[in-house]
Length: 287
Image (cartoon, rainbow, N blue to C red; front, top):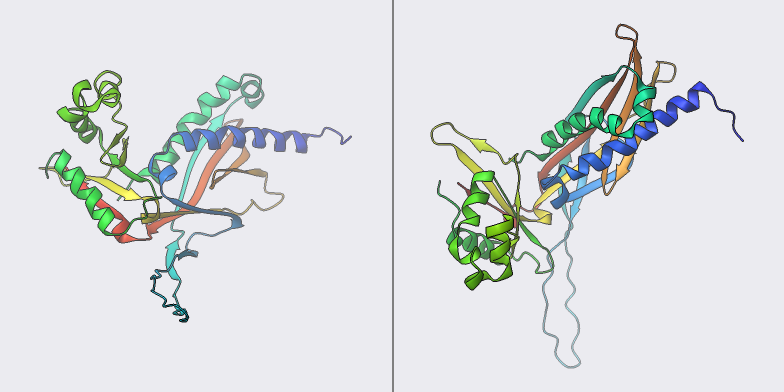
């Protein structure tokens, strides 16, 4: 049995904090959970470029009895995503041993930092949303040959979500059945015109008078989110790091001592990049 030392106790503290951090991050993401995520536990640096392969397009050919196949030479597509965003949230815990003894207290410290990082990742780059607008968006994705096996999502602002809940045909029992009751009583829209509807606080807005809200309808392969591990701190610098990884997400948690405040400093940080993979697999519905 290995001896208990201050070194392995400190490492255990960072592991515990990391284990609490990532589920909180994933739980606060909407867009980040829906897009095409690319995560590998390899080290990356800000400015690195990651090549994400895109499936080629093939065609079906008729073959006559006794005929030969038509050979195709598909070209694998490629999307280059630059790891150009390094976000962090740092906080101090004066008495870390007390926090470890009371798990709810540790979550109280951790939650605001993780939510702040989730908000940074989540932000996505008229007229009110009506049934006709949603129908046209779904038709556009169908015309773009989005595979029927890929689910389609609509991420909207609070105002747009409210407008959707007030479309009469989707919010009454006699026209929408149980789904209408859910929209009217529970306030959840669910699915409309083959779109799963999600409400996000971080839908981008531009302009001032009037403000344009960029609601987004898309399939998974429209957008890529690439996350890579950040390097460990140099040995002997007084900092200890641990990685947290879950469901194609990864983050680093660094613990160090701050003598000026006599407290332990925790930094939660993520290195990531985003880019469009297939432009025609997404459509903006401005409101």
